[in-house]
Image (cartoon, rainbow, N blue to C red; front, side, top):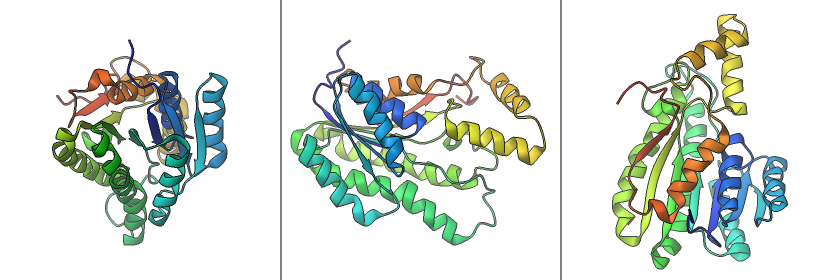
Length: 261
């Protein structure tokens, strides 16, 4: 299937991580030009090296999403290299495991800025060009915690849920401009973040890590953690011409883990 992404410009946030890297690589295989940004420049460069080794076009930039004042400079540099952004993949890092109660307001502010305001502000920066061209894709990766709150991930559950309301509202505002806006929920995808969370749970409960993983996979109908490339496939479909009538939706990529309908 031709996804219609050849020579589209895709800005992928968090492209040095497991999910972001997989998304960037798959978009590149479909012919998109990739701006791979991450707070860890070496990680972003690794993603770019993978893309270029397969004949794709990409650039890496170090970008601290909590620095809202740097958005204009970063996006302008990407536009000079590849042209206006056609596809925006909002994929941010997560906060540390915590309860939802008793947290310092400074911690809430820190992650609200890096996980929510950054996404809103970057989207606002690229929307005018999308509207002018009557085509755009905005895909935001959140968490299964927005449907079924995850114990000890209180800040993540709360902040990521705000992006669901924002995304649904935005989809109605820009649909007539040929722009689709969707949310993707990763379940237990085998990335460094999931390994970290499993390790933290094992420490809290004083249990072997293998027991934690076994317990976790037993709750997944497919009986395993997802692969990052499986997640990247879904995001790439949402960015494609094939998904032109799909907007305002929340798509679960969780192996059937979330029990609610």
